[in-house]
Length: 247
Image (cartoon, rainbow, N blue to C red; front, side, top):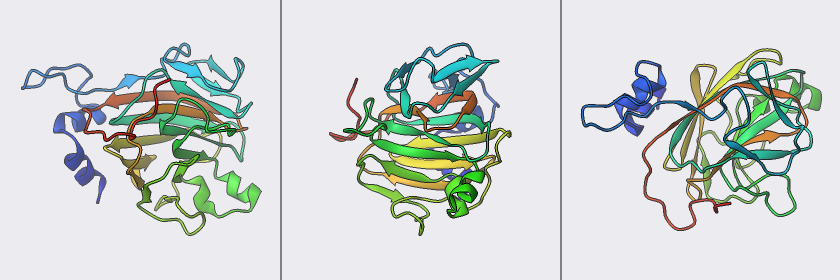
């Protein structure tokens, strides 16, 4: 399924227009309902809207309008609220080659057992130099999607032969350190579709988790985010246990 077919089948035309900048946030449609639009999760000034989970006061800072993560200590911060159906628009880059990071969606607000990360689905962010440095397959660095910390019931669009349970991107589109990358992540009723630098190339289905926190990740490398915007979409029907616990 191509991007246009997916978008048309997943949410209203008004939301699609807003995604591509044709309509702004907060306009009123013909049915007198507010048309969904993008709002910043990261406001470009401070960490309002986020709560540290298990990193430190020095891990995350704002510099020149960008959110800068040192990568240390390993852990996450989380959004203050949970999200169910949404589109996430993120622009990011690594400073040095070999960087490793990402963010978790529909995640718990606390770490899993004695691990540094919460249960959820990870949207991988890796520098293309990482597989070279670590002598691993190149597919690692171009938008892997996978369940983490005990999450069950996920179905990859493109099952990876490298790591069981992961979904790999059909094209290698991530740019190297020093260059900005753009992820657009569409999350609706347990379905995830990932666009990397202008093309939808990966997807995953989650049957047991459809609502939770969004958690940017610190995993050892400095990473910058100059945009983290979200379009919230109407909710669906959640079964018991499909939401993360409230923190």
